[in-house]
Length: 193
Image 1 (tube, one colour):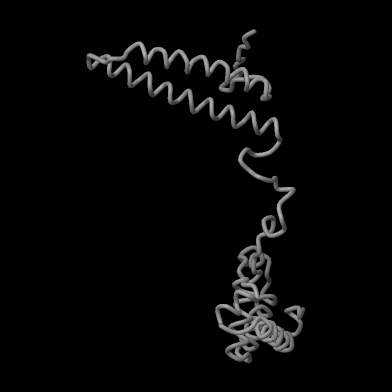
Image 2 (image 1 turned 135 degrees about the vertical axis):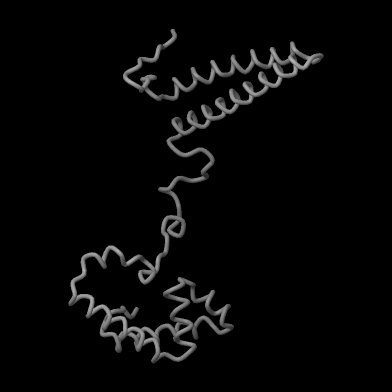
């Protein structure tokens, strides 16, 4: 029961990609690898350059067939389990830290928003930017360090405490003070929480 590929234009229709079709392909590849292995064994010991070239070509073909078998095994496992082979748990079972990518909004590209801005928006944006800079200038050095590490670089309080050699509760206090000062100066642009 051999299937033939139908050709339409430049594309070949090989049928449905099911685990069974991949198993059939793997069986054929295993037979081809066996034939190549027997062909290599028949050529040994090599006595001429022509035999060496033929042996190297057979080994190259065998290596290619073995790689194809490995690919078939990979696809079969994926089709049977519904998960990418090698993963210990699927995306639906990952922890929150594995699913989420923390991103600081200040580091996101502003190109999309810049296209839709009007002249009045740009004037307001530069005013807002100068207010943020003024608010940051109003912070103490320790508050600024803690705030930037917590919000711009997404460090945890424990990591900040280790970097600055202060306690975690001090980090929390400095960040909270900085948020309050910035909120007061900027006018509610940042949430205090």
